[in-house]
Image (cartoon, rainbow, N blue to C red; front, side, top):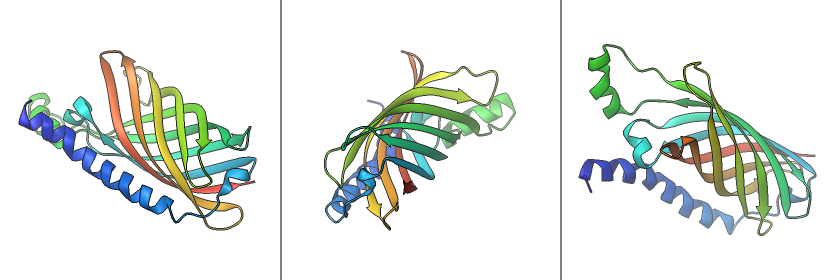
Length: 193
């Protein structure tokens, strides 16, 4: 394996594994959560770290997302989410291609809209999966199929509010050969009613 490609894959994964271990440790100290509320809404920032071949082209991408959930069973919630993601070009990609095209690459905006489910294994821990579409702001780009899966926990602040912390894998696929993939982290304020 080419050493440069190996480092491009490994560097974004280090924060992912650090965050995963940190979150597992924090799960042990979490209180009972908003799992019993019929509706919850959360809003917060995300960071998406490109993984695999995506890391050769894209850099770390900040986002903000809004997610709503509806409890259909004590442990199962259906979810609907929307986000605004600013995808940046990787530093090496810019260095190679900006002189060639004699222009600077600007961040591209995408708006993933997804629906899915969240399942609580315990009062402290959940797994979630969603699928939908990633809609580009630029007209020359195509809409892609978006999907994600992750784990998370909710740290109670009051009877109706909490901090929702999650780690996830997210991908946007134009076709089987063109997939943009990220390891993502989200910390959001959640309100239940």
